[in-house]
Image (cartoon, rainbow, N blue to C red; front, side, top):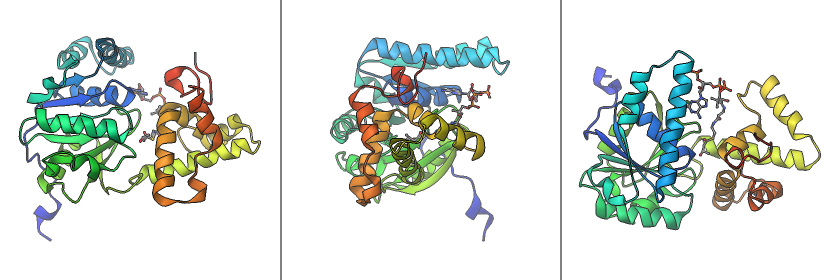
Length: 294
Ligand code: 3HC
């Protein structure tokens, strides 16, 4: 074909300011990704302490990079200088792209998208980093479903290169293309996905993680499972280490959604995963999950 067939995606809608909604692990990582790549970032959360914790966490991450000789104080100050925080959603009015990274709950996300539709300027791209909710349903609560898209980052977002770019039947081509171009500009690799439960990665990853919990329930020591997968099978983490990074609450929500969508009996969330969530043992973020952290 023509050379143009393989041209890299272009930014069809100029993006200078990125809004990120949320103060959790994913939100914080996404803020860091954009601020490090030169974008102004407005972070919106409900509580100022949580917003402050996002900035402190990013500062710590940048300090680790300095300690390893990969960055310097001026870069750190420049990155932090691009981040502003706000407790009111009206601060998103000037954003060219908003990435939602709040609770994995459709009603909560739908309420936010209704607000984004009211607040954001015309032509702003409204993205969700949901891992398990139908993006079409978020698109259709707005009067601008053509501007709604999924940008599914992986944890830890500053490190993991993949972003699943999820279009619905409503998403405009130039929104899809702009988001893919932004992924490239932030050092990410975009993969196109349709709006199906689990997209590509989680549709394969979570049944495996759920099976690992079942295997442990059947009496196999979970430390041995982690060691076998990590040391012998070439995975960067064992399944229980990874569950603790992702968060058992997030993992349970994804597994429930996959089970609801595909009905596979084997996709039913493992009892121990449900018990961990009920006990508040969510993983690294609570200091205890399948493993215990200092
Ligand atoms: N933020 C910023 N940087 C981080 C980081 C974080 N949270 N965690 C690690 N890093 C950096 C380190 O600073 C280090 O950088 P350097 O090499 O430049 O010095 C680099 O990443 C490697 O870290 P470490 O040497 O400390 O440790 P590892 O080599 O074990 O790497 C890991 C850590 C990248 C997290 C690796 O263990 C890994 O790839 N784990 C699997 C992660 C994974 O599969 N994630 C996907 C989960 S599924 C998901 O997110 C989908 C969602 O919908 C649930």
